[in-house]
Amino acid sequence: MTIERLAVLCAVAIAFIEPAVARAEGAAAAPERNVYFGELHLHTSYSLDSYLFGNRNDPTTAYRFGRGEAVTLYGGEKKQLKHPLDFMAVTDHAEYMGEIALCTMPGNPAYDGKMCDGVRRGDQAAFQPIVESVSRPERRHVAEICGEDGSRCREAAKGTWKRLRDAAASFYQPGKFTTLLGFEYSPSIPTADGHPYVPGTVPGMLHRNVIFRTDHVPDNVFSSYDGSAEQLQAWLDADCREPCRVLDIPHNSNYSWGRFFWEKNSDGSPWTKEILDRKVRMEPLIEIFQIKGGSECQAGIGLTDEECGFENSVPACKPGQTEACAMPTSFVRDGLVKGLAVQDKWGLNPFKYGIVGGTDNHDALSTSTDESSYTGAHGQMDNTPAKRLATRAPMAQGRDPDGDDAVSMLRFNPGGLTGVWAEQNTRESIWDALYRKETFGTSGTRIRVRFFGSFDFPRDLHKSPDLVKIGYAKGVPMGGDLKSAPAGKAPVFVASATRDPDSAPLQKIQIIKGWVQNGVSRSKTYDIVCSDGIKPDPETGRCADNGATVDIATCKVGAGKGAGELATTWIDPSFDPKSRAVYYVRVLEDPTCRWSTWDAHRLNVDPPKSVPATIKERAWSSPIWYSP
Image 1: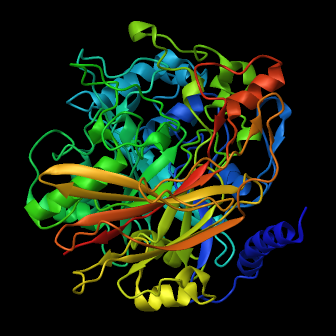
Image 2 (image 1 turned 135 degrees about the horizontal axis):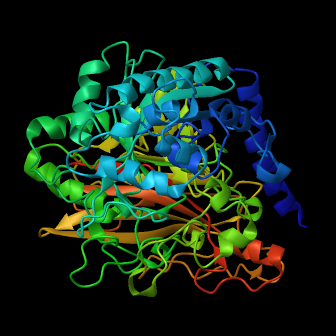
């Protein structure tokens, strides 16, 4: 190992150690902000689907695991995070909070009923009528459990919500470990044939995670039994008044069957200015990656590039197909660019999203995201290598269109993480960073990303020890806005990334630019800095591959390639001062083995051919927008 490479590795280690020390000591507010990693999408046994999958880990277990304690899995195996989280939210489904309480707590009228008995036995057949009840137009609770008017479940949900709040309060350690109060609002999209749910499959969804700033919250949750996504936001507007503050985070737009970025309300009705105004205020973020795949973009669909073929878990729509498939209006990149046109039409941009990542883990094991030690995320459905590599998932049944297995666990992945730049590790500071969109998402590793834009940055800002100080003083961070350009000036961006020492070296930093030209959405991907001394081609704006390798037989990464840290200052070479634009950073690691390859080694079988043997872990920054 050369002295230069040793120095880089030491610098990377120090970069991770210093924030960790500051967090452990509960350091004072940092004006240039620290990076904190956390989870905003997690389910425990308080979620009915998690319970039916066989998970019995409750919110207390989830918080213990998140802060670094060892937790025992099914079968006696113990699991522990290599590095504790800085913050987390347990977001159990608002739907069925009452049902899970009534079915698992003796002494109430529903407990001894046939359906609750099935729930306690983990009978998937018991789940179907409950899920269908919230997917149908009338959206009625199942009377056997909740009573004819649903009041038993609405009242019981208050108790579950109270227990969730109490658990978060007992684990909150300001300056060291932050617990955010939240829940998931989870409506399913009915299919065209009138069957909204098939056991073992993943239905279409327009789900959101609701995250509160403090413990000043409503005394109950709002579920899709209570109304649409637009009605959820109206309810939050009315019931979450100062000092209560709240935001909601859509996720899995890849599973929205094209209905997320389609310029309509969730039920297909027309937008109104009031609805859009509320959406802009309450919905500043979108989850770009989680267990059920990536929502940035998809190979061959809409605005795409060669790196969009990453954990795409939903097949592209065939001609005439409108459900159970992916289309351009399913993806964040297309939505970010569409938002520029919506801004011109409506005067505000409802798709002006910052970026976060999450897991959607249903074992209560937040950020169990390491590919080499993945143990599943759906209870006893995927808790062994054999189950995870099975052609069909255990317990799964129902439709299998065109022989394409829609429920194989191979389509899933360990999930992602959220990074925020905040002054302190407290509820208020973390939430404020989320709200101003100074956030980034990762595919599970702890890459650290910074991104600033300005018209006045020096061209070598990335070399300055005062990069961050100058970035805040003369520009805007990720999530910010650049206004009309001074005459003759193009925006200057500075981007930097530091590798996760537990993962692979960095391969490149890219900027994806989006704009609308003659009414048509456009995007271009630029490699702005690459590892191993490789320079972007001046014609294509792309770098040649750095030659990083992985031995599939052992999953050993080849030595000598990639970087511990990358940074550069970049000027948009095709800037039009009259045209709106959006820019975000994507950071790629060198390739490593996918979880399915690691599992194949454990079983001494060949890696499955239906999914890639290797992946490039990555991070995505929140965008910076230009508005003339």
